Length: 353
Image (cartoon, rainbow, N blue to C red; front, side, top):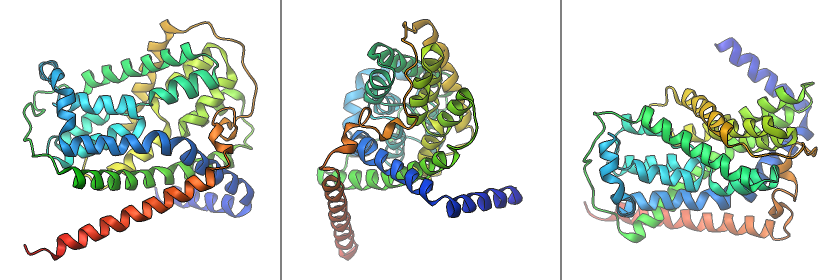
């Protein structure tokens, strides 16, 4: 294993040194994806999921579902986690799991099981970005979303049902509003920093692999297995039912980039992650099979650049003149937030025990 790691590291170092333009282009692509798509669509939901768990608001929302949840042998927080993942996108479900874990309403074993079904793309990404802007079919976007949700629910019934799951977890009193808000935003900021790092890394790797002499189908599979957004864009360039089915697999699987993001969020949490990627492959297969009977009539393939995420057609904000100003504001607000957190921490330490 050490020899394989040495070979991979040597090859990657050689590529970084000999292909500086491709590395720069890949890093710019990843940064664009973070600023233009991931930050506005994921960060608010990550903070909101943590805030719901810390204040106890999530319990009120999902309380009507508790009888059904307990009858199915699921943890009480399962509906809240699933709703967070369905609405907020890939990392939001994991963020909710960690928040309930910190609040004492979920144990590590249950969190590991719940992780198998809480990795989903958000409706805005599936319906608008993939369905409407890539495949030019909002109908297909809604059906892709339905297939993904059904696959996730099936995985929930398959992996999460167990008599050992806590039916009545120990409930803690919700944190005060200000404290919960500060900690939720700080937790979301740390999580997004880890996510962005993997997005940039995978984008660089995709750019380095671009010159490989691969036929369209293997290139599409390789791209989608590494990164879901670019993979769906390449699948759309194939067109037809084959492209739609590949997109369904990529969306339910999530790609290695999303998988690494999830593992980064779970780092030091103690949640077992064995079998995580197996559950993602199973989710991808289920999503593909569930889409088959719902496939609409699709137009012919539309040939366009592979890396659609850099074009104004897919992400108009990428060419906005206010982009640099927005990025500067985000950095300034983050610095202010961490300064406030540091002050609050110092004040708490100075208080007599």
